[in-house]
Length: 329
Ligand code: ACO
Image (cartoon, rainbow, N blue to C red):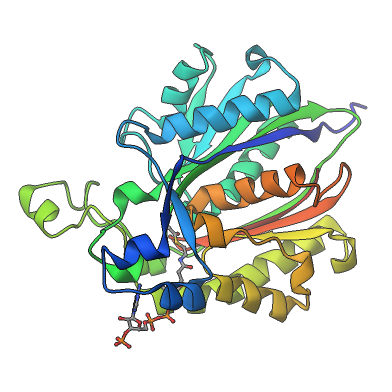
């Protein structure tokens, strides 16, 4: 009998644009304060991409790092998956733009849209493709430029978001099985609490949609907050159960970095002390699908995680979508 194909995580990488936008910079743009933003969200600064620096460019730079960390040549990649809600264009996919930059012509490439849970959905997709035997080595990216779909006159949203990209290389293995579990969920009935109204088929772009700024993020922050905490707890507990691990086995929890108060509430409800929870929101803001992977990459690079450690990633976002995964790095 053939042995089940396992998934090995070969390496991770990340990239942030150079420009830093601080809370005091924002004080000059909208009626806000460093004190309000810090206490309500935990964010102190975020990165902002250049005009001529599309999402695929951030994805490319993060991918190069991940390929280096994985110690493989790009030619070994046989599928490219990009989780994003800020694609270069509606089509072609950002994955196709990335494929061109990586010079991997003919390798299949597609985007995946699950908002802030995008990277967890991506891990689930990569795991399924590898286990099925269809693809052997997958480049998975979470990349966003939320600054480009932000209404910079709306203080309710513009203080929250940032830009960045993270990448992971996953490969088929007979010896390893590093993705111990994945749990996903969604509820489309909440689609009007966090969304981008114009630019799709419901509301094609017209002069009036632009004037009304319907091409920028709209969010009912309080309602999103209220839903995020229980769903993240549910996802984290389910993924833990499916992995057959216990809380004590998890070296580090890496939650979606949307709001420090959400992170603390989730940790408290799960009974996890904050010293086991990774936080970098103060310098990144919310970068949607890129948060968990860039945080994981930072935790690895700064020595907070060692080879063999077990980590849990958990996220919640527009859709609503939610998900968690227990992985061994
Ligand atoms: N500066 C100063 N005051 C502000 C600002 C600001 N930047 N933004 C809002 N306020 C004001 C409001 O106008 C309001 O004033 P009012 O009482 O006079 O009306 C007051 O502050 C309180 O506003 P709330 O909305 O009640 O503030 P809250 O404590 O809920 O925090 C926040 C708002 C930070 C948005 C929070 O609700 C949140 O983090 N929500 C979840 C966001 C999230 O998780 N998104 C997830 C995914 S994103 C994705 O999928 C792309």
